Image 1 (cartoon, rainbow, N blue to C red):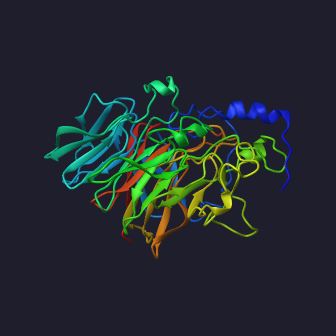
Image 2 (image 1 turned 90 degrees about the vertical axis):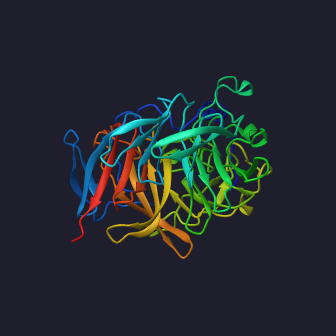
Image 3 (image 1 turned 45 degrees about the vertical axis):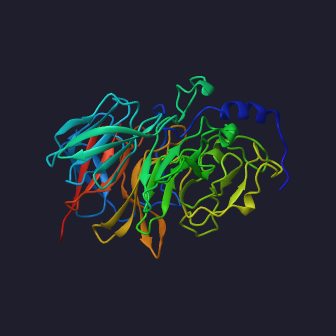
Length: 423
């Protein structure tokens, strides 16, 4: 379609260089409540009191009990140790905590630079700091023998960035072949130079057991969600860009920005490109459609008007997606989510910081069927009040060895334990 370039576009481009859907968003202004979108529904969920909270309630499937299991200010990503203790990263505090079976925390590792991603390979623990990835030998509740396995990763201290880096937090996963995968967020909302940086930003990097770090997938604006599926595939949940202009007229309009572009949940293969900042996954659905499944990419009118920067039609459609500005963070795979859900992916949806009305936080589930993920289903919601303010913001959900679901919340500063009745 033909588009025009109004004067407002230049202003929009300038504003769009600021970061959005990042892990450091300011609090959203109060706004009207959000109705469920085509990608998610609260049908079948019931209100339940969060035990141990200040009278808060959430919506959950019938028979689910939600309790505050541990009070952990700034709780972010999580991982289970080989001896069934839960690790929780705290970037702002610079440490990784270890929790016993009663939720009592101790410091496992401290004095780190914004630690975020956690992953185990046997008794080897990997921790992603903002500028490097470390390995530790884990045994008996202790982490020793720190070794830097990937260094010189970009963060706000990198000289070439001049102190400006919007997505410093990194995630890490261990592949089936023992390769390390690391998420490297973009410098800002639109910063195309990231695609040519060394190491590449807005990318997922891979370090094989022997050899150098290389770009595995690119055009991944902020792939904070990073996990390995049951078949060994690498998946990312992406915080996509903001202030996207309407291709019909080239204007940045709230009505368009509110629902564009979607947040991809994508299976990565070597060399895959998720398009940012030149191509956006298109959330516009046909009448009656209820899921952002296999959505194609379209040109970004601000950065790729004529398609010369990247041919969006050649990009593989994103496997799944969430509503624009959902801000997915932690991603994990579960062998069997109770309540009849079965195997699938769990996503901590942090909620928007700049949408009006704000996108509500939730814990989402994507069923694992026939080697891929099905559409988004809501497991837990209700963290947002009717005026748009929040009392909680889930970051990550992981299944525990006891069959319970554990959810970190950096806004409420807790870890929830979710149990399901057997009746």
